Image (tube, rainbow, N blue to C red):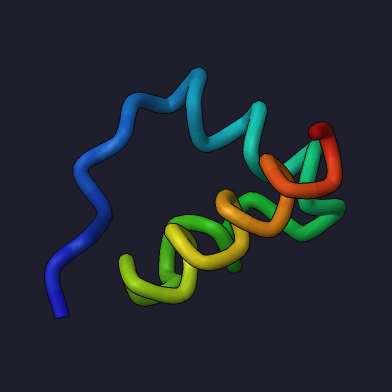
Length: 45
C-alpha cells in the first residue's frame, strides 16, 4: 500500500479533526480516510 498523497499540513489538520495520531492518518487506507472526512462533513452540516 502506497502512502497517501496529501500534504503534511493536511495530514496534521485531519489528525486534529479526527482526534487520531498523525501516524495513524498517514497509514490509513485512502477509502477509510475519505469515509471519515465525509462523516466530518455531515456533522458540520
